[in-house]
Length: 347
Image (cartoon, rainbow, N blue to C red; front, side):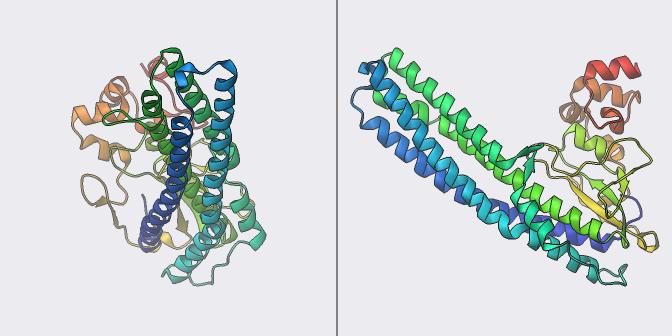
């Protein structure tokens, strides 16, 4: 991690655990909504008579009913997430200010972003560049498409109502369409929660650019970290009040996590006095390591099989042969390179 204010980083990372609890609570509320949706869908299918005997009109009417049920409950799920994010942006900003003020490297009082800025963050959550409302709509459309296909297929094959319902709700050892829908909804909630928290933290850093001079990408050192996030690990950008963050020692344009679904990365601050602070340690799946440990050094402690699983066999071999470093897994714009692109560029 370099020479950093260890206390500040530790406090922010620890707060991520509290954020995961908020995230888990919201996921639980959303799943309650989707379980109700599943119950209503199952009841609708069970009460229709023999589905395999439906004519074209009755089948169309049933599918319209299914779509109406889906739209109603996905709108309710979206509302559950909105309730969570209303106060999350302010809470995250307030915690960041409190942490800055409590840090020994800070001598002046840190300030919150304006209320309007935080309100806009909560109202305009983006996940992979798309508004959160669009993602809920995509989930509803995807689930509707899969359910409609399952019902049509069951009818064509002359399945019983129970067999068609099993396609929807699943059965022992065989997950149904609703299980996939629930996992996708949980991923949207978790990623949106991380997005609003990271955005609020970033706006707070920008509002205190006289104290926070650089931002460093922090990736979890464990088996779940992806190649793109490994490549970004440790990269820094200048902090500025106007939101323009120039790269420091590299060419990758600034971006704020999450950059993909279920991304756990965060931007951590370097203060103007951090160079006077002692180096600390950080957690990893191989135990406590020096905070300045490069991610390449961490990966070198893994077995060959673990490295292959983490990067893919071809890329891992290029890395072991020292043809590439982990930071070279992305191009100068931060886009992940394929194995073929890496081989063409570095072999």
